[in-house]
Image 1 (spheres, rainbow, N blue to C red):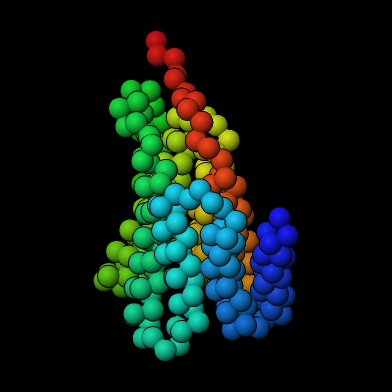
Image 2: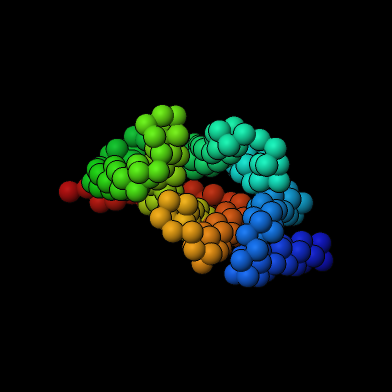
Length: 236
């Protein structure tokens, strides 16, 4: 417990320092501090959680490596930094997506949640369209455009799968996964606004804070057992 409290204290210290430097306009220092927050969170997870999922482990590892790239970004070309960093984020979210989907019965979903699937599909298509519309003026129709599109699709699939998993499992673990995924989506949308609309420090702070909140819920769910409670909807 003492080890846990020390790690949480250090994590909060890094986060507070990030916020201070972010709002004081010391963007470079805030950028470096931000790159330490999530790897430190991953370290806390590996130190304190004994029973771990391989896919959730890979999610944290890929995400942390992408964050740590910030420390050497000035030594990489902009193209390599962009492609490598975003690819690692995509792999991270893909691992989390697999972690959620691996225990869901597709047949059960198709049988009991047809309308949910239709609505979620339509909503995801619309959101991807809106995000790409925001990004379009700032990227050319090359690999960046398709990286951004695939990135957005993976993030929205993560949200949809976590919501369906909550409908399917209807327990605290699935609820935490859904809330965490929801925070991730809001964080990514705010990041798009920060990168492509207006470079306001508040937006960057909110994006990082929501991601940290998401990791908190992911951490909490990782300590829970996946109860065998399946939600069977009434079919008329």
